[in-house]
Length: 224
View (tube, rainbow, N blue to C red):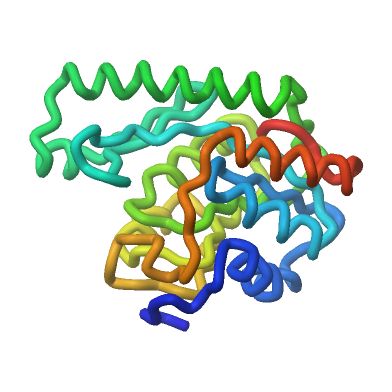
């Protein structure tokens, strides 16, 4: 699957392939943490197939306002901040833009907390956590998520995504215990791996998660 384009019908199809790839690494001491928004449909599908606990990794991307779908870092709920200084230089992002995007990221995090509920996951009982997104582009959102988890927990962290940019995946090699990505590409655009890849809004993610909790109430463990 390496380097191929348009190999997944949608996020659910991609999640099923990823779940099959990872199933032998899963046991009763494993949980999954999905990164909103695109990682949530992937995460709920995998949690159902693997019958493991699902949590939410609350993290927000720092976006470049004038570049569609491009970012320059990420901020986690507990204050872990990773900035892609290469992109800051490349796109001539000034300090005022960085500060405004940090404020925007904090607002997104507050919105996620309101939408997804106050429940905090107890991850002390797990030995392995699978952090999942719908793709790894620059790698900074996943890197921020891993570093946030490492602050509070010393188990095994697996970074998993159906598709990813080779440089973004390389960024994670010193922080993740394992990286699973069946479709590694030389292009950064995640959507290139999908036939149907709509942008997800928070209210759509909220609906997907609500339906999952109604069907599998024992599997939702809360925010990570």
